[in-house]
Image 1 (cartoon, rainbow, N blue to C red):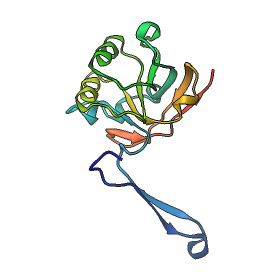
Image 2: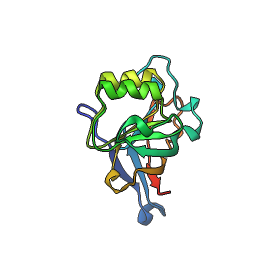
Image 3: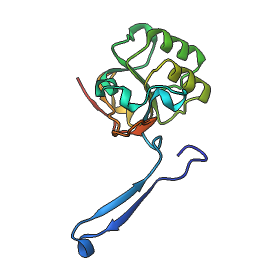
Image 4: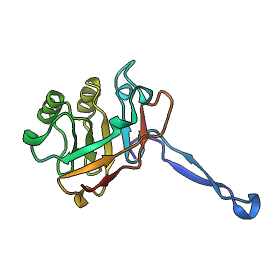
Length: 160
């Protein structure tokens, strides 16, 4: 949880014994856990989830080691380091398909807003990145939240 945000809750509201089925109610922010940020998260009148086709949230991705082998058709995942101003400048130049950040790090607010101004899709709090090879297929599909500024995702990789 980001400091100051309300905690997520999952509550059992119906049971098989009483109602014939189990059902839970989930209450959470759109930026809890592993999630994706769209432009409107940090930019007035920016693009929201409705403005992106699902293809924008998946594709070939590469673990960042240097910018020498990154291109605009691939996503870039930061596993071993945070994104500083110099790296953000390179990201804005190359414009990868999306950017992901390990749960070991947190975006600097100014850098995050700077990347969102450029309409770069940002995934945060990705886990188990140590299990991935350098290149893989990434999927981080958002929930269909109308005018969404972001969404929790079930992020996963397919090893190619």
